[in-house]
Length: 208
Figure 1 (tube, rainbow, N blue to C red):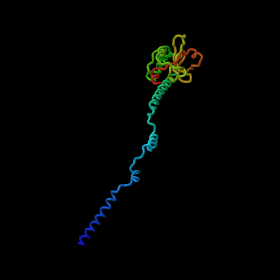
Figure 2: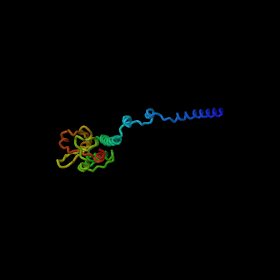
Figure 3: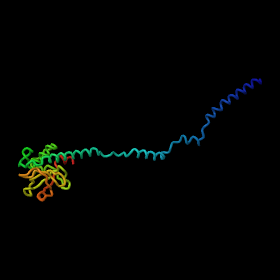
Figure 4: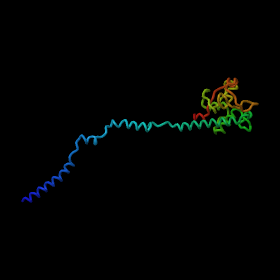
């Protein structure tokens, strides 16, 4: 009997040793330790970081299409340059009433019409009065190379002369019998008194 009691006691003691670690492992962790590990960060603390990230990424507003605008400006500049270059090449071609080519000579409207047709492919009306009506009005302070300048050389009622504006008050034209295509100034007394205004042909006005 004594031997059996010793065996039972030893078994109970061994069982108690096996249960203790399990109970220790299942013992709950104090709230003071678990809370910092499990509670989420406050949303307010994230705001500065989000703001900094948004700023570093740059503005979200789309930028204007400056590339397209620049391309349009360059195109208009090329058109104007082509007109001026061809017009200047025709200096010294003699004046001929009704003339419309370098081989025959030019009158004023024939000269302008030839330059626009061969420089940029734009067909203008056949005479200065009709050319005056075909373009958009331009203030003298806003004139640019390639604009047309008109004059009343035969009285105050009718447009009778036209030239192509260059720059700084200068224009190129085929003036009159006995002369040739030449550059003149709007400030010259003769032309200043007869100046009727400037027009921008549709092929240029359409692009500014």
